[in-house]
Image (cartoon, rainbow, N blue to C red; front, top):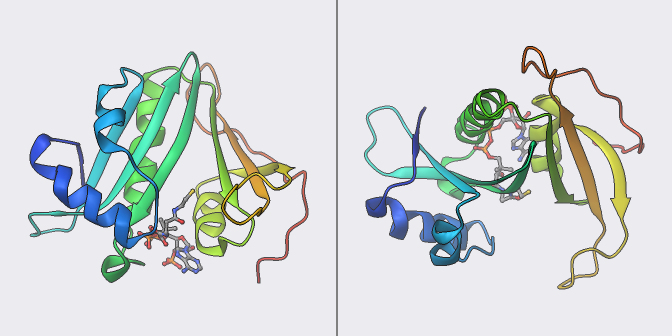
Length: 161
Ligand SMILES: CC(C)(COP(=O)(O)OP(=O)(O)OC[C@H]1O[C@@H](n2cnc3c(N)ncnc32)[C@H](O)[C@@H]1OP(=O)(O)O)[C@@H](O)C(=O)NCCC(=O)NCCS
């Protein structure tokens, strides 16, 4: 899986991925934000993106706003490739924390983030206005010296199966 910075020719494809993955994305607004970082993942030999990530880099924190893979291209490592790029960027940016919120029922995303070293540090009750669902707050701390992920610990017990 190849990861690249978003380019104008990717815009339509990224909008389609967001729609197919049922993710809200105002791409025009995001590309105007100086702190937004957008990447795409492209399959080997493929020409068009199959996944994208949107990160906000604010002070020494990276906020994962969105990671989405087109439903026809899941479980092939696209989101993992984007997260690996994100962690490399965070290290280069000397970020100390990578943070995100995820719906409590989003088992696929929670498993993905845990696999990349994130821990569940809290619950925001009724965070999502559309369904009233809780958000889980997840965190990955980076060693300020080396940029390597530091081991974390879940503060919230969750049965994921
Ligand atoms: C969550 C999502 C981004 C994963 O994308 P992906 O490209 O399929 O992820 P990867 O192939 O890199 O998966 C890496 C690992 O994550 C976990 N994972 C991913 N999807 C999973 C699923 N449906 N069920 C269980 N575990 C899953 C697995 O551990 C997987 O490794 P494996 O395939 O070797 O078992 C994708 O399902 C998606 O776009 N969902 C809708 C959008 C969304 O919810 N985004 C997160 C918002 S915060």
